[in-house]
Image (cartoon, rainbow, N blue to C red; front, side):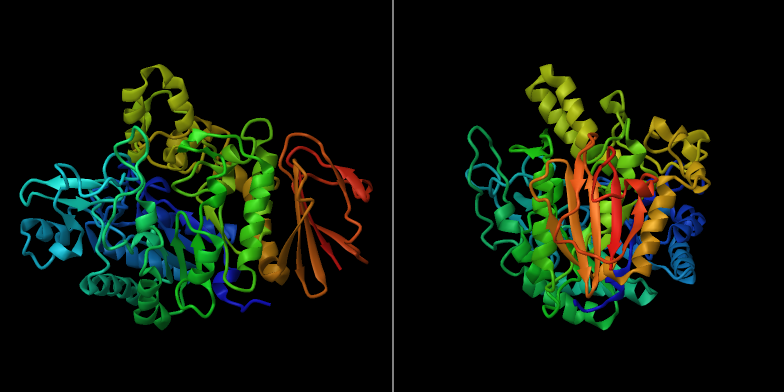
Length: 561
């Protein structure tokens, strides 16, 4: 059996502070707002709260552009509020994980301001500066937020690198002073008593030193430079140094966000003897419904692809590393809208997807509102959207092709990051109980039907179902440590798998469709006793035959002994 650890047994709840709960009526969620809802999270049963960035920031990319790593954003409160929040979390026997955003800073960070002053500044080498090439940028890399990944600085006649927005210049990790500053920042928060870090695009921190051109795309000025900044030459060296200098000195939960990572690479990042990270966020399963030109190119998801992807990761990291389990977060659309049916089978499919997530091997991450079945939003006009990635894409596509407005909006409805960022739906009152003021982004109009207030008192709600899933994880070691094996790999509607630990076995049966496929009990699954642990429909015992029809989006978990 894999080595036991508290972070393997935990369930993590991600809070996007801006949209969680507003205590002072300015329309923006804050730390005191989070404090007001800690008992709600305790009731749900989660162990770890992950806070998206709360540091001082000009908010070009909603807090992922940090101007001071050691102070709290004014809109969210004060350092005193933060310390009180941490104390209250610990008082309830929960832990706090902070976001660590150290691939880049804000261009308003003191380091960058000093770097910009002169080519001779001691801070110049904290970032990547290069002269132009043939009257253009130093290379042809495209920013993830579209356009060039380089911004021209008139004063020095040089360009600086920004993989994301031009207000997010990349830090130069080749410089030992940069690494030392980052490690000091981490120690600052750990000494306050936090319990771990989620590390933003951490596999981008090592670049190929020559920063070469990417293979050009026909008719395109810029191309993805990902091969030269993802999983770069010194990435393991940097993470092992971070572990040795900081992480190994505390008992922490660590997860690295790593776009473009393979199972083989993940084994290196998470391997038990490697001294790097506990787990990674990989993106393979959330790229399955994207066409060849990227996330906005919508493609229908095939269940066979989803099975193949999850099985590859479950088996690949078995006995070697550890999986993180998620179906949505602050950058992804709502899971019930994407993988389920948020209309006719909203309740059933939200519960089915939750069953899927919580019975895989790994640490489950719940994104705020997921436990209520919050859905994607369809704002009537682009003016209602706030996300920089969405707005950049819209402007670029509209300038290329004004005819296809409805197609562009459909892509935003399906994949836009603001789907996850609409305010948390606490009640059916004004603004869903999120704020007494005007919310920074509009509330999803369905808050009167979908909200926490109603679900807390409804025994059959999605919230209560999540609560039961989390309790089962705590009661049955097999849910955490059992080995995963896929059955019925070819079935186009049913996703079924087993978990095995010693003499115990779980059978998880999930209908990913609105049809009613028949499930036949596999002959190799012998048992003396069969117990139904959880289901999202009430099941008549007579229905528990060796072959049975599954209802739309039905989920069943049996314990076999």
